[in-house]
Amino acid sequence: MTSQLSTDVFTSEWSADGAVVVCIDGSPLRTDVITWAAEFAHRHSLWMRIVFVAPNSADPNTGDPNTSASPTGLFMEAIQIAESVSPDLRIRTDLISGENTAILTALTSEAALIVNPLIVTQQDDLTAPAPACSFATVGTSCQSQATADLPVVVGLDGSAYSESALAIAFKEAEAANTELVVVHAAPPEAELSRNFEAGHAPQHSTPLTWQLSGWATLYPGVTIRQIEFDGPSVAILEQLSTEARLLVVGRRGRGSFDDTALGTTSSAMIRKAHCPVIVASEA
Image 1 (tube, rainbow, N blue to C red):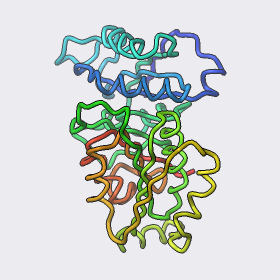
Image 2: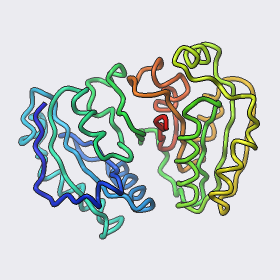
Image 3: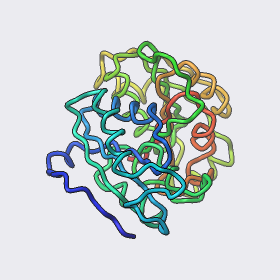
Image 4: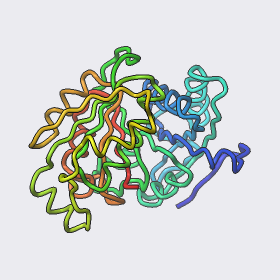
């Protein structure tokens, strides 16, 4: 992998705060993605890293030869969008080229959250390795509506990554001053088997109210609404995502973007949700 970094000053204080990493390439910028990432970084006092990702065969200095957009021009445009959210937002720009595994490893460094990491794959190759940190997708199906009054939705199944999903969901609900909807569902039997094989025992014997009690103490200002049912959660999460500002789900660990590693629910929500989705890494 070759990596060309900007000459921006990068201090230890920035890395301590963590970064919201946004992936772009030579295609036209999606303003909604840059805006969402900047707003998230601003709410959570994070800095922002805008990364131009080029395939291994491309020259990262020239961008995609099929477009007229150069990395410099796209960086300037992305920075203007981000600074329109908050002029005080701390921003770093990078150029990275290489194979998917190396790029995702590089992006994980100092990242609190990676936005739209699928951009580094070819033709939505879900077998590419997932980043070893939480990541967000802002899909094209997202509704263009005001989200100020919409809740944060988190899907739980009692597995090892539920606590990580709850941590992100509570932080976002508090920062956005909005309701948290907690959906607790039994995962499919096949997914339970994969959890056992991976050494992650389900925790359905623990009542949801007990699981939430500690978080409710940490975030007393967050209003919680609980939804519990038996069965797959894909349908209800997809429905709730039509009226949510954010959906948070989990994944087992550091595997690929396919169903086996992410879990059927997380993988389905990346494709089907009508709001931004954060897939939480295991704590």
